[in-house]
Image (tube, rainbow, N blue to C red; front, side):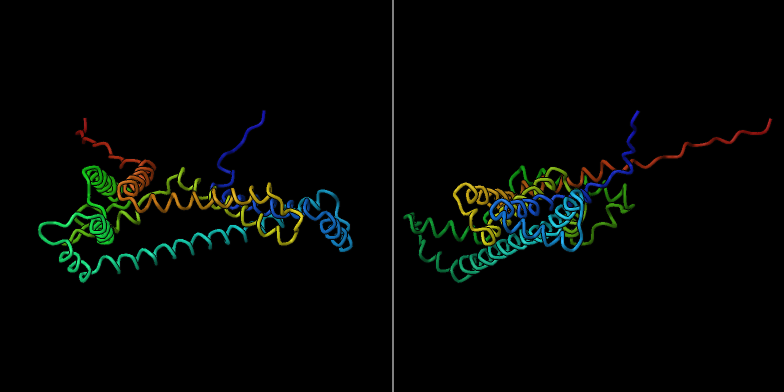
Length: 279
């Protein structure tokens, strides 16, 4: 009977790195299909160095795919980081332009009394509202934040031995710090982000292989590579939009804190022993 010791299996963090095999092998196999002569020449040159057996060539292919795939995964991370930085810069410029005190005073004069309700004034008022915050705490947001505070307080007490009075200062703003650093990554979110990053890396690998093997430049291959890129950017954009919504983001942080709280066993209380006199 075959028995498997799960304690000796690789951890999930190690298996995440194996996702780099997909863009790397996709890149190498695409070049082999698009330019068979180049693949044949490469194999012959490798054989001149050392006559590897078939499984040796397979190991070289997998190893090369892993290294190249890691490069494409890092490239996909760089693309997402640059796009996020551009969005944040545009958002900062938007808040600077429509959220300043001068334009607010000017808008008050243009709006006038009685209120001017034409379309241009309403659009400008909406832009100013978005630039100055754009969202108010709803009852759902307050309820979720209350639950998040209760779960974080229990986690601090159970895992780290920090009570409520030591966790907060005179201002009470320390809870935002605890909300940020506490919690365990949500498994479904981590899987979605890793899948999106790997998919984006496959799309980038597909477009780069077009430069090496121009025969791949047909509508089917380009459409497939474009689909990979769109899917990867969609996953990254979905997470970014999720973090911009206070209700969704606080719900995500609550799930993260609850996941770590579930791993903490409640403190065990020692049974009270009663002393009995000698017979």
